Image (cartoon, rainbow, N blue to C red; front, side):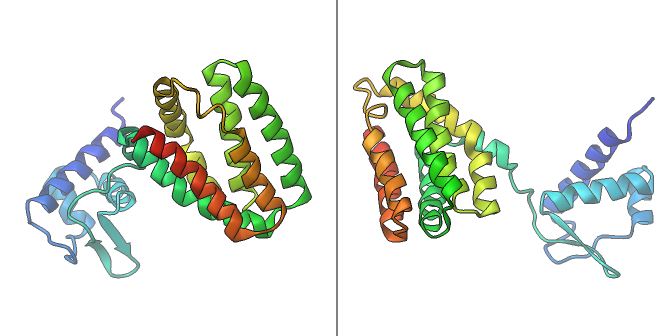
Length: 222
């Protein structure tokens, strides 16, 4: 049986090609479903799926009662692809933005449960830094950093951190290979200082310590 989804993907690529060729410019309204279905030799349901796909890729926008309009000439690159292609410095700069603000908010919003989580993850990280294999150490380190972001109680920041997580792991593997003096494993005090600033409910200090820590990691690579 022929599946509809590959056909819809082909239709989406054809529409994207025609947009890229200049047939429709930004702001232009696409022909109706029936017209497009006839032009592409597919059913209207396939056109609807293709439009939904391009809307998800931020090329088209469906406006209730008005039609479908072009809002970009090229599809935005998939977020996962962006992260896979990012180098270590790009990942660290992304973490700086997320975790610095996360630490600032956490200092104002942390709960007793968050403080307990800091103590647990710091202890686990210290233990792993002494002798654990790199993959165990990386998980322990990330658990602390995630605890800081979670303590901000901002769902968007947590989601951003979690979307970064696979690329952070790969970046840390690369980092540890370059860190022949084990500086990253020996920076437990910097992590404890971030947790302490959050415990003291000092947003500026928490943000400054988070930024200083990640900036120091970045400087070791450059």
